Amino acid sequence: MTAKAKKQFQAPKGTFDILPEDQKYWEKVRKVIKHVAIGYGFERIDTPAIESSDLYALSAGETTDVVEKQMYTFKSRGGDPLTLRPEGTISVMRSFLEHGMQQLPQPVKLYYMAPMFRYEQPQAGRYRQHHQAGFEVLGDQDPIYDAQVIYVCLLAGEELGLKNLSVEINSIGCSKCRPAYRSQLLRYYRSRTAKLCKDCKRRMKKNPLRLLDCKEEKCQQMHVNAPNLIDHLCQECHDHFKLVLEYLDETSIPYVLNSHLVRGFDYYTKTVFEVFLEDEHVEGGSEKSHQRSKLALGGGGRYDNLAKALGGKDVPAVGGSLGMERIIGVMKKQDVKVPTLFKPEVFLIQLGALSKKKSLRLFEDLRKAGIVVAESFGKDSIKAQLRSADRLGVKISLILGQKEAIDGVVLLREMDSGVQESVELEKIIKVVKDRLKK
Image 1 (cartoon, rainbow, N blue to C red):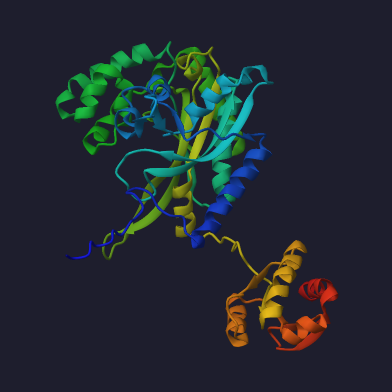
Image 2 (image 1 turned 60 degrees about the vertical axis):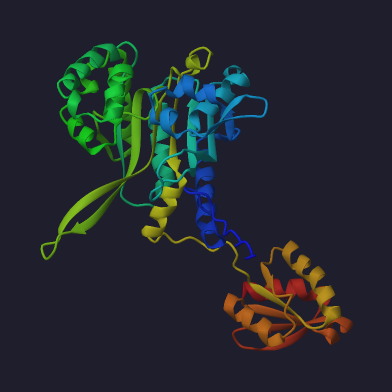
């Protein structure tokens, strides 16, 4: 009999490991998102990674790509239909209603950073398990919060060092002004039905506005001459959108009106937006013609009717989110400098059984004193440990041998000069701190 070959396990398709060398980027993104969020009065919220499947079907829209094709849905052992969270806004609103946050001073401003799950074909910056950072303002209909959410999303990217960011913005109106636009949109597409993709033919019957969100190239070509919803806004939506743009003008945010922009969920009303990175690249041979490509980093909008779809009373709300993987990809491409998470200043070298035991305590004393220290306790050779210290670029090495351990002293070695001196163990913390200051 031949031995059964061992299976080589890999991360599931569309997922990835965040390795130590990439953690500095993730830590930087988390730190900046938190800094910006707290600075603008957003408080952290964390919702479960699983929710009731009905929660998304009721609020996101049954004809959306997420509900139709991308949700990871399963039944619990008790038979409850559950879904891995595909986006953050719906969970935040569910939590807002469940915990009676309507009774708090309004608006309630919340932010999150969390993994999301969508079954789709993996591609650069888009994964089946991905991470979003989101900002949500619940309980106020003032258009200034639309502008603030857009500004905060853009500000987070700028403070991360990203260049060439821009915003596309539109208003998709409300239940008062959409019916007339819907009729005109249907008239436009009826004569072009044969050219539509299979999904869009179905969307024409259930939700014609979703025709403008199709990613198929042949359908996108038809968007260009489609009627503009912005020309059919009711007075309330018109005035709301006008104020949003005026607020954005005050912040000097670079934005572009895109009259065919819609979002991928049915709960959006009035303002919708997307954040893009405009990237110049060179094409062609000797002539080298310059063109610009766009990469979507995030987006959002107003969702005043979402609470009612979930069984509550109307709650005016607006929010936006950013894709963390895409942001990190851009940071790497634009060579954004990110500090190393572990940058030791001191290396602790030990020789012999007694000194190794005492080194554990000395290491902790150094750490408590705020000194970043490294070690190679598993190595017994002083040469091997000094090589490790050199490789890490530390300023000082502390050498604790058998004799030093018995005498209660430590050898302090300055790595640049190679000069060594003996320091009493109880004074070593102060001496090291003084040397590092110099």
